[in-house]
Structure formats: structure tokens, C-alpha cells
Length: 337
Image (cartoon, rainbow, N blue to C red; front, side, top):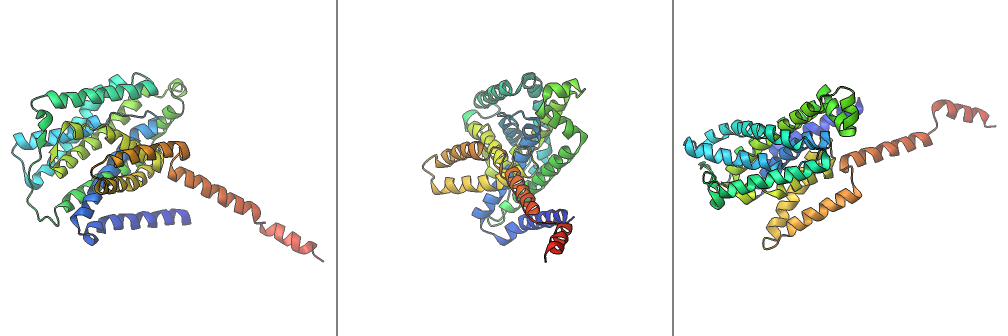
């Protein structure tokens, strides 16, 4: 009970700190870090609901991110929507991402894990090339985001709180999936797909449903990112480093856990943004990200949270073993002269 109360209190403190963050730190440069961090909290958690729970590492989720980004710009342009009304287009970005995920998943999920990775990369580059060459995407010039009239000091605030709301919903979805019968089936697929199929688990349907569920919030996040940045270009909307980033965040915090991607995103994204600002003329942030990925895989293959939990458990067990219980203490005392 004490452990549950501690977790609940810690979660309440974390939520309160995130809610109050833009009110305490009003510098737009700092709140911009906050917006991008929350965007990646949601993206990494959504990616983990498929890859972390199924064991199929996807390097093609940038397809959903870029599709959502482009759709928001196109709908706002053709429907003449501007201002806060643009936020109402975010669910449509999620719908498009989910619709794309169905044929994407039906193709990619026909194969097993290592081949699946290659197929997701191939489909990603197909979408990136299409964004460069189709006229309605603006080609290499991209698409501009609609305008929103706000004071520069508070411009980031609506993006911050909407990103926070999406992140909370995604983490809640991840938690519910983890505790559900559907989640148990998904974890069974991760542990032994052939055995799960033999036990009657509808493997293909389970994997596809999880794949689509992870795509929908990433499409919404892509739309929010495009509106916040102000423009989408093919190399940034369909960016291969996006998949590297969300994978690194999930592996760092704890692959296949609910809180792991959250912790990973809150560490990696601010660090990457700081490195980008400090070393604008180099690709040091990308080099550091790749190096960190290698260190995590080599030194912390299970992630920070599972490793820390395991070590704390071992420490408690060793302390319990060293401490004699009350009966042994009484016997020892009675044996003394």
C-alpha cells in the first residue's frame, strides 16, 4: 500500500510540475523546449504501444508523423482555417494516419521482425520521395502553416497544453493496453509468436490493431508539430531521425514499459535541443544521439526503469536476508548465558 501511495504522490507531483511549467518559466525559449519534449513524450509512448509490446521495432512511424503534418497544412489551406480553429483539425490528422497504417501494416506485418524493420524503412522512403515530387505537397518548398495571432511571450502556451493533453491520453492508452487482455495477447506475441498462434491468439489482428492504435496519435502529433513549427518540408516531415529518436527514448527509459518512453523523452529531447542550440554549425546533436543509442543498447539493454527496479529489488532482498526475523532473534537471546 505504501508503494502505491508513493507512486500516486509522485505522479501527482509530476503532473502538477508539468502543468505549472509554462507559468513559472515564461521565457519562450524555455517553453519551446517544453512543447517539443511533450510532443516526443506522446510520440515515444505511442511508438512503444506497438513496438515495445509486440517486439516489432518499427522504423517507419515517421510516415504517420509526416502525413499528419502535411494533412493539417493542406486542410487549413483549402478550407481557409486559421487561428485556434486549426487545432480542431488534429483528430483528422490522426484518422489519416490510422487509415494509412492499415495497408502499411497488412504489407509489413506479413513478415517477421528483422524483415519487418527493412520493409518499414522502405515504405518510409517511398513516402518521403512522394512528398518531394507531388505537386500538392509543395515539393521541396513544402507547405506553410496557418497563422495564429498571439503575444510572443505566450505563443507557446496553447501548443504546450495541447501537447500535454495528447501525451496524457497516449500514456493512459498505453497503461490500459498493458493491463488489458489485448495487451496480454500482444505480450504473448512478443515472447513467442508461434506459441501464441498455437494457443489461439489471433496474431495478425492483434499486431495490426496495435499498429493502427500507435499510428493515430502520432498523426495528431505530426499535425501539432507542423502548426507549431510553422512549415513542413519533406526532409523534416518525413525525417528518419524521428524514428531513431523515439526508439532511443523508449530503449533508454525502458522498452515495453509504460513509464519508460516518458522518462526517455524527458531526458533525450531537452538534451538534443540544447546541443542543437549550442552547436548550430555541426551535427553534434545527431552524433550524440547515435552514440547514446549505442551506449544504451550495450550498457542498459533493458532501460533505466527496469534495470533500476531490478537492482532495488535485489537490494531489498539482500537486506531482508541479512536481518533475522523476530523468532530467530528471541531464540538467539534465549541461548545467551
